[in-house]
Length: 164
Image (tube, rainbow, N blue to C red; front, side, top):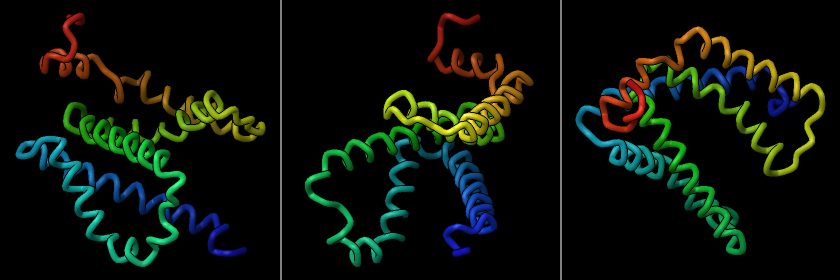
């Protein structure tokens, strides 16, 4: 079994990703008192660009084919919107709730791939989607990830006026 197919390597990468997201959210929460979300996202992209610039310079000829530039631009715009929404959620709801909601992304990604790309998932993927959705319901119904407090926060900031 190669390192690319190792379940242990997958677990290690997932653990590293979860740890990195949690630390990133802590920084966003702390910086949100001083900077706007737009500035925080800009800083994240700037630091990421500086960190990755040697790799970008080395792989530029293979990095971005010209015939697919528009698709890359659309994808980059959507990634920006997703990162902005993710960081914004950290500032308006509890940090643990925001991080827990981030882990529902694979469920929604699978469902959107089925709806928009016409994917036909095998039965084991349907089971994984159902289990992920059931897990999301556990913390949604328990009231830890979505609560009336969130609606009050949105109302207090002027985003929702219908709820009382």
